[in-house]
Structures are given as C-alpha cells and as structure tokens.
Length: 246
Ligand SMILES: CN(C)c1cccc(CNc2ccc(C(N)=O)cn2)c1
Image (tube, rainbow, N blue to C red; front, top):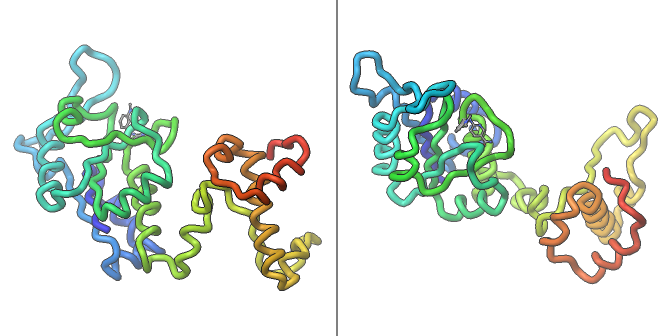
C-alpha cells in the first residue's frame, strides 16, 4: 500500500506512524508513506502557505500554489492514486471506502489546516472529499492517520491473523462486534459467559453471532437493513423483545 500525505506538520504524522501494527507494516515494506509539505514548495521569503479569505470572515485559507505543487509532486510519484481531501464537508468515510483504497493500492490524502483550502485546488486536483464524521478538527492530520490505519490493517500480512480484519466491526457483513473476554476468569467478582468456557465451538460461534446481531439491533439498527442475514439470524432477531437501546 502506497499512501501520500500533504501536510504542514509532517513530523506529527511521522511520529504517529512509527509504532505498532502500522510501524511494523512500514518496516516490512507493506506500507510506503510519502509526505509532502506545501511550506517546502513556497516561492516567497516568508514561506507563506495561508492567507486571509476573500470576502472577509474569520480564519485563514491555505493558498493554492504551494498546496497544488505538493499535490502534483505526489501525483508524479503515484500517478494512479486518487487525491482525497479530508474535510467536514466530505462524504462519510466507512469500511467499504477503506477496502476500496486498499484494493486500489494507493491513495493521496490532503490534510488541510485553518478554515480549509482554496476551492480552485479542489476543482483542479481533488478527486474525492471525505469526512471522518460530523466534527471539526484543527487539521486533517488526525483524520488522515485514522484512514491510514484503517486501510493498512486490511493489507494482506499486516495483521497476524487475517480473519481479525474481517471479524472486527463492519467486517462480518457490517454487524457490530460481539463482546470479548480474557483472563482472569473472575474479575471483580464478574465471571465470563459460560458458553465461552465450554469448548463447544459451534455454540460459541452461535453465541457470538447472536451477540453481534442483538448489539447491532440495539445500537445501530440501520446497519441491520444492509446486512445479509441468514434465516437463523432473522429467527433470532424476531425472538428478541423490544430493544433496550444499549
Ligand atoms: C471548515 N473547516 C473548519 C475545515 C475545512 C477543511 C479542513 C479542515 C481541517 N479539519 C478537519 C478535517 C477533517 C475533518 C473530518 N470530520 O473528517 C474534521 N476537521 C477544517
């Protein structure tokens, strides 16, 4: 997986991507990261990357020339990569998008600062505007980091057990994950569901599936519409009483 990132704070990105699963993926060459800082591509003495908005109003806007130069420099290195601008105005990011970009093999992420970027850069160079959710951050870097993590963990060989990429939430036809337990068997006088200690793998798989179904119905019923449920799933769901909402 090749990921390009345009950011005014490359050190903030680099540090966050040196550890854990993502750090190992970089060491093993499963993730190639290329950062480009518009400030390095400015032509003026003050290395200006932002300016006041035409029409007035609060905050600053990222100026088009250095930002465009940074995007073009990464497009030259990764000509097939879609250019994705992270902003609260974008299309909601989801696991399907993560899978699509992992399958494609490369993506260029534009992390904006201030009140955003000059719209002419979006018109000319951005393929897709994407949002992590309905909230505002001081910059797109943390959104970019989340996307890099979500995409990299789907790369074959990155996760120890390949199933776990499929098994976590939104992996099994978009259902929420079941509860998990580990040692000690009794913690603060609370025990572990007996079925998990039974060694009956069929019963365990059924319990986990039913927990996922019940939890999805209680917390995210709209996901059930999109999930492809078996007959047994549907029988189980109808057997549940009214949702207690948690
Ligand atoms: C209008 N405005 C403040 C703004 C516009 C563009 C970028 C940024 C940088 N901050 C971001 C980026 C993404 C997200 C997200 N939800 O994905 C949240 N914040 C802020």
